[in-house]
Image 1 (tube, rainbow, N blue to C red):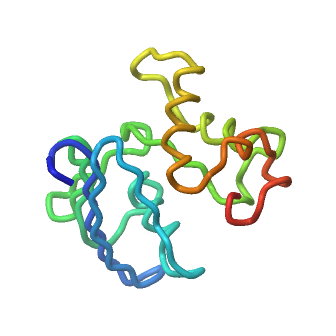
Image 2 (image 1 turned 45 degrees about the horizontal axis):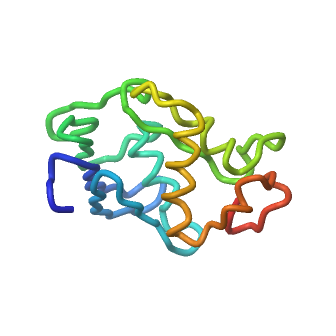
Length: 147
């Protein structure tokens, strides 16, 4: 990430519920993939960033705003963090398509329309191997990796 103020920066350290030591940076507009075996902490890291789990140590900041800092005792509520999260398969809306599940977690702070948001989302996801036809599949009709 070229500009440390623009984007997401997270450093997480904890022992429970799983040992986790993570340091990541993602610039604004970048796509970042968390890859690892089951139980390696991918979901826990995302839950920390979203404010759904509080790690023992670390710091999380987005666009220069501190969301969590264990040393300073800062911990913004999930509602105050500008983030959306689509949970794993068991928590997806089965009646919505893959794209609709992703868009469900997005608010519209800039006032852009849903068509523009859909285009932006699809443009970012295609670089990860997500195909445009995947967007209309329901979770049940998608591969386990896409779910």
